[in-house]
Image (cartoon, rainbow, N blue to C red; front, side, top):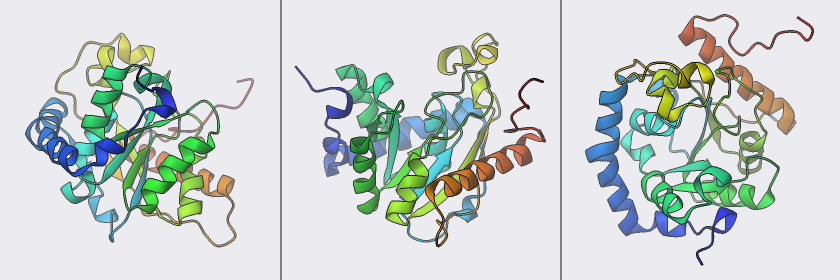
Length: 245
């Protein structure tokens, strides 16, 4: 019986032969199709400076978010990108796990609790100069709003001293929402095939001297919220209403 969950082997997905296959999948199908499907607009690529590796931190609305990010990234970064994927969603069925690793170079992450094993897998790959895409909300937004960020990305950045690139993905929920989103307003909306989506990259971030993980995580949240307000024009994006109101 194949191992699943955190035990699912993913090293094969980073082997030279599989990387060639994945690059072909991306260049001939995934990227062209995503750009056609979404009329994708990319902003802020100039914010990605240096050799990396980079820890990309984004809001999460749809299962289309990862293809959108892959399509937005420069090829050199995309070819060395690892995606942190929910263990309980993508790694509990052997066929789905195989597809997830093959196409997205994904690794399983326990999104429901702090798991040192998950963190160690991600840390080792960042140390080996793999870029990492992570969604700190722990899953797709259930209501379309930005939710609390778990501290995994901040922890990895603090431990590895690597660069965090905050990101905001605008309106991906409307892109075939009934199929890929979770929030009711997207699931019940018409199945749009040519919705305009914006992927924007923010200023590079680093842990400051003496800064703890909680404070750095809060700064990452603030950066994503700022991008969201700027792109969407919604001055309240990310702001939680006061209790009792």
